[in-house]
Length: 99
Image 1 (tube, one colour):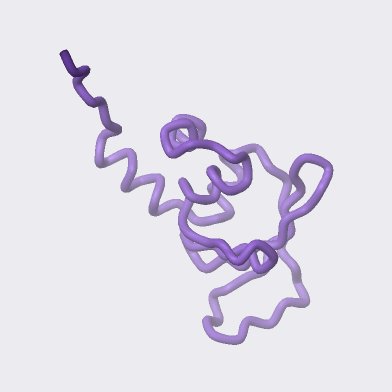
Image 2: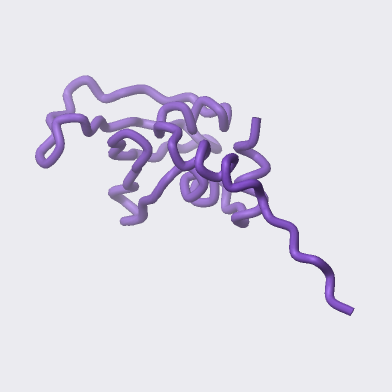
C-alpha cells in the first residue's frame, strides 16, 4: 500500500513566496543590516544585505521577495533562502518559515 502524499496548502506557499527577503531573514531569526553604500546597477529597488549566520556572514542582493548570493551564485525566494542558509530540505524550510 502506498501512503497518501501530504502537501502544504497553496495559500501558505503563496504567502511565503511573497515575503520580502528582509521579512524572511527576520522570520528565520537572523541579524542583518543593509549596506548604505551600495549603489544598484540594474534595479533601483535592489539593496545589499549583510547577514550574520553561524559565526560568519553572507552577502545578499535583495529585490522584494528575490535574493541572490553573489559569492555562491545562487538565488531564489523565501523557501530557497531558508534552504540555502540552513541547508534544509524543502519540507523543513517551509515548516521553519511557517507562522
